[in-house]
Amino acid sequence: MNLSFGSFVATDQVKLPGLLFTPDKPTTKAAVWLHGMRSSVFYNSTWINALGRKLTDEGIALLAFNNRGADDAKRLRLADDAPSEEEDSRFQGGSLYELIADCVHDIDGAAAYLQAQGFSELYLLGHSTGANKICVYDAHAKSNPFSKYVLAGPGDDVGLFFAELGEQRFWKALDYAAKAVKHEPQKVMPKYTGMHPFSAQSAWDILNPDGAYNTFPFYEAKHERLGSKPLFQEYRAITKPTLVIIGEDDQFMETAGGAAGALDILMAQTSNTMLKVNDFMLVPFADHSFHDAEVTFAEKVGDWLS
Image (cartoon, rainbow, N blue to C red; front, side, top):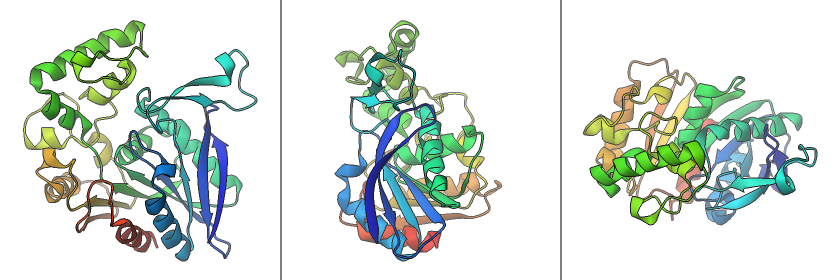
């Protein structure tokens, strides 16, 4: 296995750093890894290394990169040839300011980077918010070069925040964010809303039941509707071979009645769709981030992809 550190440019000129794992023997296969909200590839070395080792053993390269939503808040560099009017060649990034639809720029940039190096068979893997991003990407990408998806620990942020904030506070926070977005999209949400320190634009993106972010509405499927958007709209539209893999003890699956409940809901949602292959796996003794089960996770994903 070989490892190199580098960067590539998203299709809107944002520079993103990443790690590229390649097998010792030449291959045309490569996977892209999307991390979750308020996370970073470089803070999950045990997990990424395990995945890199397994995939390269299977003859598959792995590109794991920090997307524009990595960490909480930071200024992102733009490509050297980006328009000079951009202030200091930077703009605001991090999970507290991210809009999920921008993932299309990041993922297309990652695909172009790999294709330029001769990789032609591409797979897209995402954890937590990264899994949601795959659904958003599948729905909005104009040209999709990926042949398989892995959705790891897909998240129901709308339902989780609704349960955490309570009905009255949830709707007040959403209303505040909706009004602030019109004039001050990057304004930090007040503490009393329960969404501090997210920006108004990110809070609106996350909480809106009818927005692009709400791709795994477990709460709505199991309890009550919060919006009018068809349940699992983006997920149900996927036609590529897809693996859903969840930790048996995933602490963020409470709105679905636990990890097994989440898989039951997803299997029911996809039983009559156009999915060519839809496989579902539970990883024993694993939490949301598969702590202490990273090798098991990597083995299951690598075996499925190969």
